[in-house]
Amino acid sequence: MVLVAHSVSSMIAVLAANREPERFERLVLIGPSPRYINDPPGYVGGFDRPDIEGLLEMMDKNYIGWANFLGPAIMKNPDRPELGEELTESFCSTDPQIARRFAEATFFADNRDDLPRVSVPSLILQCSDDLIAPNEVGEYLHRIMPGSTLRLMRATGHCPHMSHPEETIDAIREYLRPAHAR
Image (cartoon, rainbow, N blue to C red; front, side):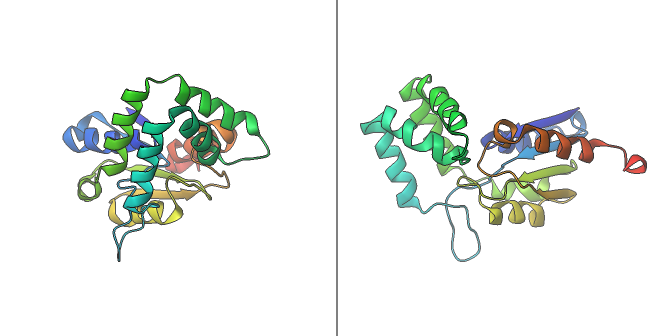
C-alpha cells in the first residue's frame, strides 16, 4: 500500500510505518514537518514558541478572525483568493475547541526522533514557499530519513494538492512509476 499524507498527517504516516512497516510499500509526504518550532542552533521548524503561543491565544480570543488570517496565509497564492477562502471556510466549519486542541497537539509535537527509524521508501514533497513547513524542514527530513526522496515543487503555500493539483499528481506519479519506466 502507498500512503499519501499531508502536513501533520505525514507524521502520523511515519508513526504507522515505523510500527508496521510491512503494511506499506511507500509513503508520500506532502508538506510534512516533524516539529513546527525552531530548535536552535540545528533545527529550523518555521516558528518560535512565542509565535505558536500567539496563534493559540488568537484562536481563543477570536476564532473566526484567526481562521480569516491563517487561511490565506497558509494557502499563499494571493492571485487565487478563492483558495484561501476555501481553507478559511474549512477552518470555520470545525468546532473551535476541537481545532484548538488539535492545533496545540500539532504545533507542540516533536517527531524528529521517529524519522531515522523509517524503513519505508518515502517521497517528501516540499513546496517552494510554505509558511507552515519551510524548505529547511524538507531538507532536514531528507537528511534524516533513510531511503527518502526530496522533491522541491514550484507550488507555493502549504496545500499544493489544492493550489497546484497537476504538479502534485505528476510528482507522485513520477515517484511511483517503476524505475525501468522512468
